[in-house]
Length: 209
Image 1 (cartoon, rainbow, N blue to C red):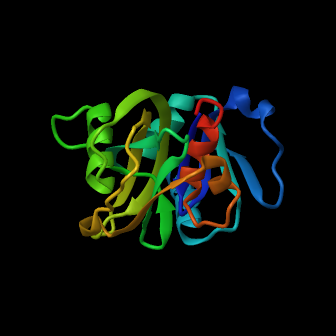
Image 2: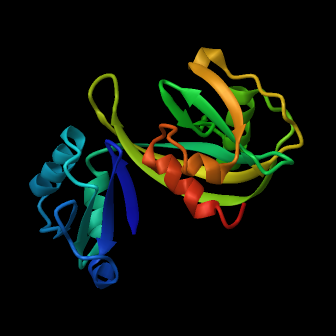
């Protein structure tokens, strides 16, 4: 199963055999069989890019690999990496950038593997020096348009990390206004603005943290 956030709405791509395990469709959650038509797939993508009519859209097909492959054909794929960083008080590292709360992350550079990129990005964006990766936290997928209008599909590799440090220095050159330690559970129940993919990856790892 793939969950891709388009305009902050999750598009779920699913094997037809798994559909019986999800809630039925309603006015706010669409569930539909992918008919194998690229035009129809683009219609769903366009709808999600332009509106937030639904809370979620699920597309399924008997040939799951074909569904995923057809979806990816409409995008240029880039990879990024980031961290869910905890300090000695079990508070998580958040950054505030472009009117939204986020986790430190960034594009993987040529020759880097995802863990190396994740550590580097956390260090650059927050000023932390000593970081230890303690495990994998999973992946998130989201889309956006490039400056030239091309569709981009970004896969972010996330890692659980810990640090003994507390002092933070937000990277102003990357438009990061603040970097703060916040209890992750309190963050999820607060009114802080964040993309749903960020809340999603935190929720998935709460029991591990």
